Image (cartoon, rainbow, N blue to C red):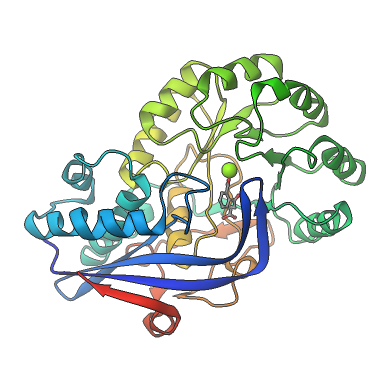
Length: 368
Ligand code: OSB
Ligand code: MG
């Protein structure tokens, strides 16, 4: 298939509740969507980059630039036999994983639609439902957080993740454990600490946490390995892992024992499949992270989480947790057992795009 048409949409979605992490507060999400067209069919991808470079170095503007200046023109020149050929097409572009990933997602979706096959089946996903967890941001006070945990536990989310930062860590976890001694609980620091803060992690080590996600700087594999020697709670890396090579180095140096794979952060589905193979070989448990995606990115994440190595609860909560507007149908709902169904009888990412809604929410539309 050789690309005939491409469109970018910039939509704004307001979160039901502000989401606060150690690097900032998100109240609304500006989202770049990519639509690719070939032979009357279209494929969609969602870019997870944020307005500013706070989670990673990429931004909506940098992604727009890389996609419109290079990726789309190259795709109009050269056809692809299969989505797995896409990596070669963009191999000259260093970094810019999120920009590359959202176009790759649209290629997989388009290929699935042209060939009547679901993304789950294209990548050999082996699960019909995926375990769902919830990520709770930093709150104004502990009572609000405890109430949010109570609600999530009643909804049967399979594990609770708490965002931490200096001043909102050990004492908060102690109080959560006083009320909820047995829930599957983990924390995510989004790089808010340095190795010199090791005592905080020695304290957190007492609270039977499933894992500690990204405690230190994203480039700092050495200090993560030192910290992992000091504590028995597994370290899970998020921001540090941008490729299968990063994953191999981190696992081999014991800088982490679990990886949060965000397909967009590692450059796409093909790179994710390489990490899946590596994790299978090295027996490293994976789970799929989230970036407050709309239904387009969420559908892709759900399919990826159906891979056998994605054995731990994912940051894929039900659609209604995030936004009041929906741009796909059906929306993702939480089953009573805290799982989410993987679309399998539909084609591509398995959701129908509500183009009227996208046009309504779009502040910008670019035809390439
Ligand atoms: O670090 O996992 C993270 C959201 C935005 C940016 C970074 C992260 C997150 C989350 C939310 O934790 C996960 C979700 O989409 O539910
Ligand atoms: Mg994280």
